[in-house]
Image 1 (cartoon, one colour):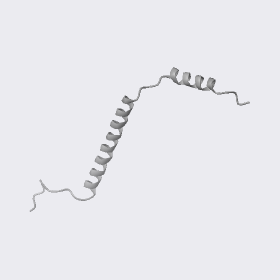
Image 2 (cartoon, one colour):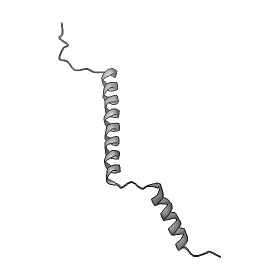
Image 3 (tube, one colour):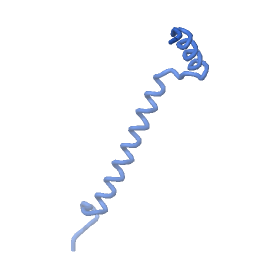
Length: 64
Protein backbone atom coordinates (compact mmCIF):
# COMPACT_ATOMS: atom_id res chain seq x y z
CA UNK A 1 0.00 0.00 0.00
CA UNK A 2 1.15 3.46 -0.73
CA UNK A 3 1.54 6.06 1.98
CA UNK A 4 -0.23 9.25 0.85
CA UNK A 5 0.48 11.48 3.84
CA UNK A 6 3.41 13.28 2.22
CA UNK A 7 2.49 12.83 -1.41
CA UNK A 8 1.80 15.44 -4.02
CA UNK A 9 -1.73 16.41 -4.97
CA UNK A 10 -2.25 16.14 -8.70
CA UNK A 11 -5.21 16.84 -10.82
CA UNK A 12 -8.10 19.20 -11.03
CA UNK A 13 -8.34 19.97 -7.31
CA UNK A 14 -4.73 21.08 -7.15
CA UNK A 15 -5.06 23.29 -10.21
CA UNK A 16 -8.23 24.89 -8.87
CA UNK A 17 -6.61 25.57 -5.50
CA UNK A 18 -3.54 27.10 -7.13
CA UNK A 19 -5.69 29.22 -9.43
CA UNK A 20 -7.85 30.55 -6.63
CA UNK A 21 -4.76 31.26 -4.54
CA UNK A 22 -3.19 33.16 -7.43
CA UNK A 23 -6.29 35.28 -7.90
CA UNK A 24 -6.40 36.14 -4.20
CA UNK A 25 -2.72 37.06 -4.08
CA UNK A 26 -3.06 39.17 -7.23
CA UNK A 27 -6.07 41.03 -5.85
CA UNK A 28 -4.25 41.68 -2.59
CA UNK A 29 -1.27 43.12 -4.46
CA UNK A 30 -3.49 45.42 -6.51
CA UNK A 31 -5.22 46.71 -3.38
CA UNK A 32 -1.87 47.23 -1.65
CA UNK A 33 -0.43 49.23 -4.55
CA UNK A 34 -3.58 51.34 -4.88
CA UNK A 35 -3.49 52.12 -1.17
CA UNK A 36 0.16 53.15 -1.33
CA UNK A 37 -0.39 55.38 -4.35
CA UNK A 38 -3.40 57.10 -2.80
CA UNK A 39 -1.44 57.96 0.35
CA UNK A 40 1.30 59.66 -1.67
CA UNK A 41 -1.04 61.93 -3.63
CA UNK A 42 -2.52 64.84 -1.69
CA UNK A 43 -6.28 64.70 -1.65
CA UNK A 44 -8.10 67.54 -3.40
CA UNK A 45 -11.13 68.94 -1.70
CA UNK A 46 -14.26 70.04 -3.54
CA UNK A 47 -13.44 73.73 -2.95
CA UNK A 48 -10.03 73.35 -4.60
CA UNK A 49 -11.63 71.92 -7.74
CA UNK A 50 -14.24 74.68 -7.98
CA UNK A 51 -11.55 77.33 -7.44
CA UNK A 52 -9.50 75.97 -10.33
CA UNK A 53 -12.58 75.82 -12.57
CA UNK A 54 -13.56 79.42 -11.86
CA UNK A 55 -10.03 80.78 -12.23
CA UNK A 56 -9.42 78.92 -15.48
CA UNK A 57 -12.76 80.10 -16.87
CA UNK A 58 -12.01 83.69 -15.86
CA UNK A 59 -8.56 83.61 -17.45
CA UNK A 60 -9.84 82.62 -20.91
CA UNK A 61 -10.94 85.43 -23.25
CA UNK A 62 -14.47 85.61 -24.60
CA UNK A 63 -14.63 83.52 -27.83
CA UNK A 64 -16.92 86.05 -29.64
